[in-house]
Image (cartoon, rainbow, N blue to C red; front, side):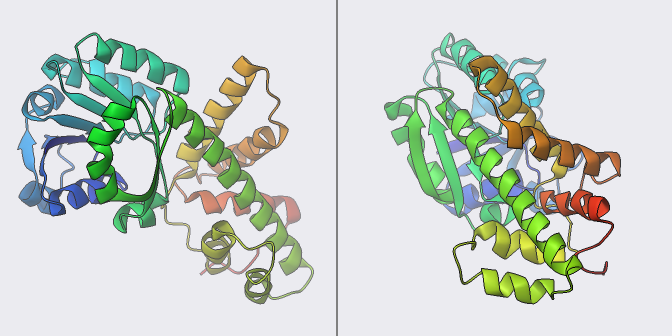
Length: 294
């Protein structure tokens, strides 16, 4: 297929390159930040409108709801280049409510729309092993499935438009609260005098095991907080959860407290740290670090 890809950041870059490796033609809008690797692999066009005119399927992978809106409907945006029969896939993590509004505007142009946020972080993007949660029609999903299979492994059509984003919000609640639990446990164990690395190793063999304990527990111990997924982005996702909870009348008490820990990290200058860096807020409260800084 002819694919347009907008948003070539930490996640988007490997995703677009996987599509290229799978045999698809991939184009992207001009950006000063584009690497030589991307310029060599992809067709670079002046703006998002030109990308939409050239492509059958347009994929977005940008940080937040306003970024999606600008990419779609701003000056030189995707909407200017749409023609009936094209497919827009938003793989960003944004508001489910806004998603429904964006999909309706795209449908007015005779085009299909899928919301397909992902989980798996930078590692999953690089390994083409992302979990992809999709909202939209079955016909659009079947059309997009070969593309999803080039980027991920666990691919699920969750429901109608917006269901993918709702599923991603639920995912981010679980991930954030589990990071908090792992951080709290390792701070406790370390301050009690136990070797946190050996505690983690022991816990990996029991009911407490998880990918968060495996990956982010190791980050906390080794003090490797270079971002796979930034705290400021997880803050955004928890704010989406809390806003949706308010709209639905659903109490999310632990989501709220975890959002405050992220806010504390951001206030200390850690907004661009990996989300495992939440442990730093817990360490401040305990006046004790899990392990010495590298």
